[in-house]
Image (cartoon, rainbow, N blue to C red; front, side, top):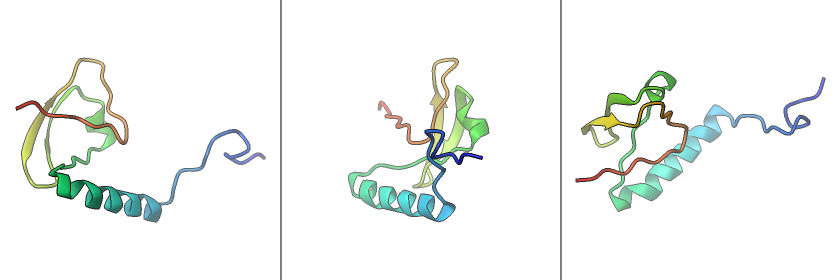
Amino acid sequence: QADAHDQGRLAAPSDELQATIKDRIHQALAPLGVTQVVLDWDLRQKSRFDAVTSDQQRVGVFLPRGSVLRGGDVLVTQD
């Protein structure tokens, strides 16, 4: 049996590595005043939903119908 690498795909990073990457991203973005929203798969499939940012602000997200957010996507607000 061929492993994922042999099939041209990389294995998913470990939970520990993912946590380290998230921590480093948060540390890099915090001085810029950037906040994060962590969403599960069910919410990322919706085009309209409420969420809470990393600095505890409630936000409403309205995306074009059919849009699906993927890991690492960035949303920019308009004031």
